[in-house]
Length: 326
Length: 279
Image (cartoon, rainbow over all chains, first blue to last red; front, side, top):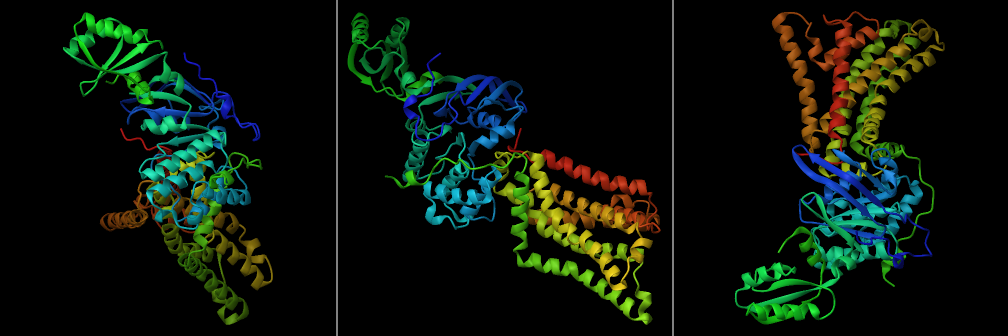
């Protein structure tokens, strides 16, 4: 199991300590919607800090978040959030978390500042404090000038920001962000990611970011949990997963490429064919011996290597490897 | 320094105990409604009945020729019957959008992601409607009782009709609970407050029409239990010690009202969820 301990670099000593242990623990969790098995026997530990919940649409990310909120009763297994059992302490958990849902959500007929203050009060803040913090967080998310406008007149990007504001108004120990950049234009998306990065790394807010967008997770998070078809495909610190003790090479050969792929696989290499005539070869180890071995194999098979370039490992590689894609 | 560095800081103040969020919701709901002019107009109309009855009591006390206008026990029953129309309109105006609007705006998942159970959510919404309906039934009826004592200069009437205190309370409670739970249940079934209003009016008129049709065909009013409003009227007659108006037993009328209330609460507990499950 990879090292998933919290990153000490992101702890701000000046601010009061937040929850530092694993923020979420799921043990053999299974959730079913009617006949559809949404989550299958999930066991995972989410460390403090920023954790990305990555996976394609329908992988079970939102279902996992909704289960952690206590909205869905699992078929089997148990969950702990902030060391509290979801089955028995759902309200205590909800008092300490902030949830930004995926879909548009607001309280009808309210302007932004009333809405955010109202959400603060619902989370237990006194009315005066809630109003004060509503103004603060609306400035923080970039809606300061529009805070007296009715939310129903907001653009999609503004609605995303107001959802973030209502999730952080009560200063939660843990944030659940479900697809926070959905429907945003590139500039708005960058600003939202900047906010999330700032929350996680400057304000020390623990967060779980659910997204199908690899760059979003890579930019904002230190750890990742990759989900696919209702299961956890892999998890750990992003840097460690990207490293994996080896390098990925892009390789193009002249000759029978498919046969050469089989030879490489037989030699123990992890090879993925791509849509173009380039293959991606994972070479264990960090020395140049791996590339020498590739050339040797090519010479033996009488295949000409036309292109061999080390590829910068990305979260996409981690994701592809985890879910077994090409 | 980016602007956001100035805008977020830790909150170290106090927090309310868990289980009080529904009060916040009720307070906000009440404040939203009372600022609307249409609602203020409805409340004035709702208390108009009280004013007319108060004048009636005053005249009966001051002018001996008008002593026939003096209130009796059934005066309060009639008063609450008349208030039924006000209850109907306020229920529609205040209640139709209470949950439907939240469903339209996906607000339910926001509410339920706060420290609030679905029962507290229902209680909070129910309390909004309850407060306003009590304000046009129980409160004016009790005010009328006190007005009588004030104009008469004694509590003799109240002493002689002590049953009126529990009767007004019980009937108002039954009327308010029936209207509020039914409306909230319907509101939880749709995302359109207008459709909910039509459904509520439809339920009210359709069941009454069905009962009256069966009454016309059979010549008997033993099907009064089919109409919630007729069942409530029957129950009211029994509570106020009057001759029951329909040929249906008090137990059946009470069960009909109870089934309506518990059925509505059952629908609410099924519909109020943080996640909508479509299988």
